[in-house]
Every structure is written in structure tokens, then in C-alpha cells.
Length: 126
Image (tube, rainbow, N blue to C red; front, side, top):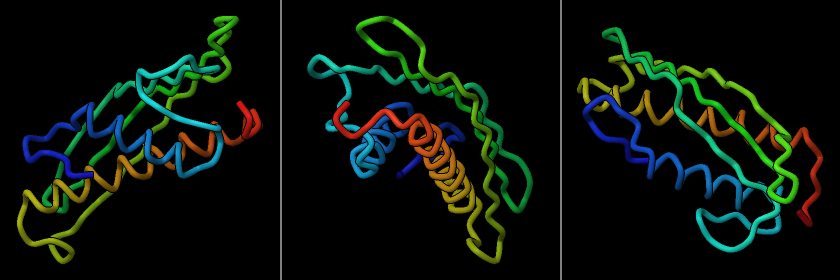
């Protein structure tokens, strides 16, 4: 995902990773950011982010909300908490541990979000 060294998760990179995961999931006929007339609108917000420890642990909390555009009905609203730890044995440099921990927490978060969307059984033709 290529997160920055400053302890944040850039929204544009996170959004791009979500879009790529949605496309790969096959849940929807198409997935794009800000294009076309979609049947559903997905809003994923980073609610909380924490990074701590020498063996760096990153905890990421996001809010996933899927809305049916035509009716405005919220189909899914779920908070997802994930964490990932990278030890000095896995990556000696602190900034590398931090980057890898952020990427791992974000990847886990996106996977759980896709799983939650999948459980809705909206159908591939949506």
C-alpha cells in the first residue's frame, strides 16, 4: 500500500486499496471512485489510528457504510477494528516496522470490510 513514514494512513492510498480490493472481489459489476451512476455508494472512514511499542503494533478502526443510492437506505453500517504487529526480528529499522504494521492493519481491515459486504449477498449484477 505504500503508507507514509509520518504515522498516518493517507486517505487516497487507503481508498485506492479499497477500490482495488472491491474490483478483485467480484462483488459488484464495477467499482470506481467518483465515476458514473452507481447503485450503491460505499463510504469508508478512518475513525481511529494508534501506533505503539518497539515491536510496533498498529490498530486501525474504520466505519464502513454502504448506501443504496436510489432509496438512500443504509444497507450496511459496521465498525471494523484490526491490528497488526511487526517485530524487530521481522524488520530492524523502526520506520520499516511502522510501515509494515500500517499496511498489515489496513489490509486486514479491508479484507474484513469486503467480507462484511460479501455477507449481504447483493449479487454480482449490482
